[in-house]
Image (spheres, rainbow, N blue to C red):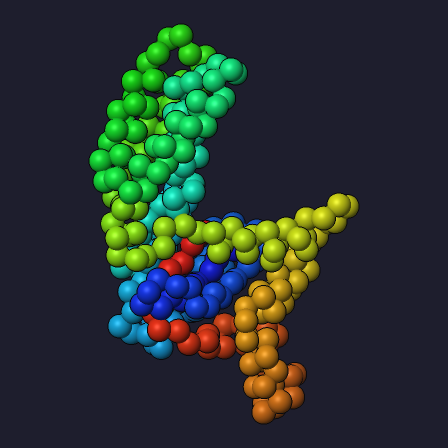
Length: 251
């Protein structure tokens, strides 16, 4: 499990990102508590900031983000996966690969910039899901796209976010999944117990967040001997680096 907080300036440029990672956990309660502490700490430092939540369509993500963010958005690149399903139904034949790719790119761009694009995609998915000449697999893809887009219209204001200079993607979190977790835990032949994975992921999250490991070292030199503190205690209490505007969360 991975979550990130990213800090942006007034021009929409990302200034800093903080990553958290944990081994799989049923219900994600401990992980979400850690993430919540980081968000609350950010709000103490930046009480006037605008807080954005960006994630995929999982219900648990939105329940959590609704408590901590002012505005929320479906990650644009997850949404384009459903545009791809409609493109597949529009040009289902193998020789239509080029036209299928072109259709996906055109309608993905419209979804990003045109407020009317979402309704058009919903109508197109509904129409294609009834086309009997398509295979059941392709029709099921169109149905899943229709379901996804009709369930999340209030979380798909990509044109509005872009007009306001706000991020629309969770690429920072996707990158953290690869560099923080997969590159260390998922190489050939590796097997992990939860305890060992949790320790390694916590350490990697610290070292991959710029400045955090160094700040822990500075504090530990001013603190009592390590045995006087609970293991890993700094992870929940160390403050983040500053930025002008904070943060959106993705994942």
